[in-house]
Image 1 (cartoon, rainbow, N blue to C red):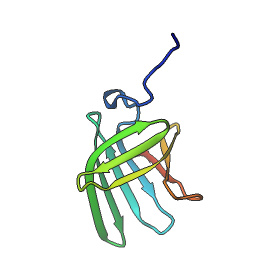
Image 2: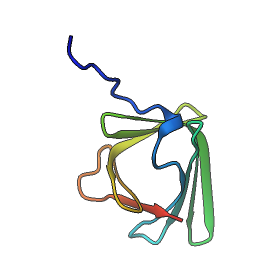
Image 3: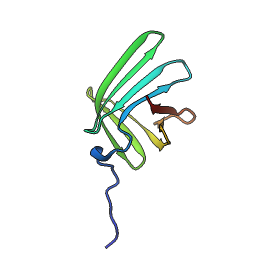
Image 4: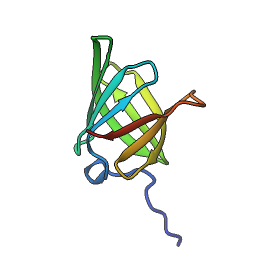
Length: 102
């Protein structure tokens, strides 16, 4: 028998749970909270206008999926860094969201 390990990381052991901040080229700031229980909160602010959503997240095969409470999904390729991670959203070829602990 081979070594068949699960490809998803159990959320309780997610090494990057915490509060993260990314600044986008258009000046928007995104605050992302990833909780050890698998829930998240996303807050974006641009020019004093705020938007937010919450839900559950999963990490599988190098992909971070944010499953919103309103049944929408935000997903992208995840690259871990020393003090955070880069997220390249599905469909984007050039822009990463570079989240650092904040």
